[in-house]
Length: 634
Image 1 (cartoon, one colour):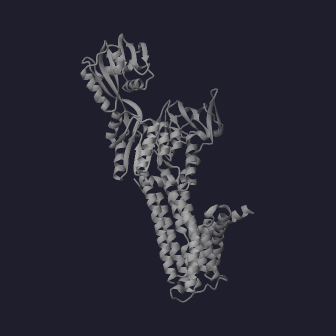
Image 2 (cartoon, helix red, strand yellow; image 1 turned 30 degrees about the vertical axis):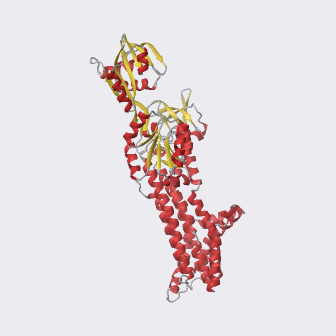
Image 3 (cartoon, one colour; image 1 turned 135 degrees about the horizontal axis):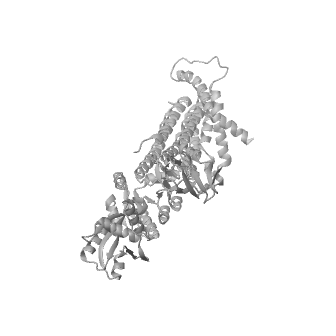
């Protein structure tokens, strides 16, 4: 029985039947308008009944169904819903013979609901596209043979082959082949990303060119695509505080509206005035505007590769006045590259120094050594096989290159081996430290022959991003575990004046708490596991590169599907606009209600004109909220 009733309700609430209801209401509109404004009444003699009855049945039944459903299933004050008030207004209008007013109230509410659904569906297009991209099968390589298997049968460690134009069925690492991958659905990047052996690829992205073989690293529900789908679904199911407030206000409006309507009838002695008050009191805009704005904004953000997990996160972001950044992997790429090659030996060129050092470091597992070798290979420098390679953990390495004994390491390591460090070298090292760079000293025959400096690479968009946030009156803070000189150097490069360095993860949390206790609304932006506690502590947490640390993404309220921090100002503008739109919509709807109530009490509005004025305003308010989806914020 319940299923049958729901099917009937869904059929009547759908677009086709709502159009039919609108047509019949329109047939009854002209005669009523002519009668209201002093014209000669016109009667539709070709119809054996009042056309508004069709509208009342089609649009009124879903409304009554919703009101009864909420009374039965909702808890607390939510039982008294806006749908109940509109039903009361509809039945009151029927009781005094105002069929058109009764039909109009029900129809406009149905129209508003359709507008909200249309906005929600547009906002969900990103999710629908994600779901449609979920691959159904993959080409597994086993014992040298290819076999097509369902995507759910792919296991971690399986070797898969993806041909040009195919969708990658799981997260994985490339074993063989080179290609370009379209990651736009995951990251919002417009151009394909070049990939080679060792690079990661992600479920749902498209292999554009060559064939590649990959090993599956994350399958099924653990894949990037499935996590992204869950995040978007969760966002759609969570209400913002303003939305919950609007629902509660709508619940209180029912008894208030009934009281005012009764008092209007008592003092005027005119039942029509009381009914008019009920009609204009219907909180259509108040109820519909907030969720429409939230869904429109979340939908737009998804198009730009920004996943907002809840309406509450979006609303809080709109109130943020301070944004705290982690450095490594957020303002920088999080990878060290050779920045300076300085020779202290006039007989040794910079290229020769790099070649010697890279040859010595070729067997090293240290990240600095690997970065030096990588730079030498980029420049196609000829490396020589080392002999007598030894590594002192945390200090440096020693090796023989073509008979030359080299030491490569920090200042303390060289001093332990009797190498002289003069004033020129000291000043060079100090200068490099102030620039936030790590240094590898190179020595031969107890003399320091050069230094190779390495630095994390600043994201080119970071400075402009901070500048745009400052223009929006949003303060920026750097919270990092790096040393003070390195932190200060990078902060100066991007324009951040407030720096807190050498922080452990728990100290980052303490700093975020201190900012909040000072009355600031804080957004924390980070990318690693060590940032997760601070992301949770902040009013809003934003995770960089959701294909990176799973823990950071789970802890965050918002996830950037690429490492593009230039999206932060866009996110702030979108959030600001959403909050302003909601506040404007609520204020406008309340103003319309107030004016309509006053006009009703002065008997300047009838149920018919009252419904026209109020509900036309309601549709206008909802339309303003819906327009957020297509607004430009760049």
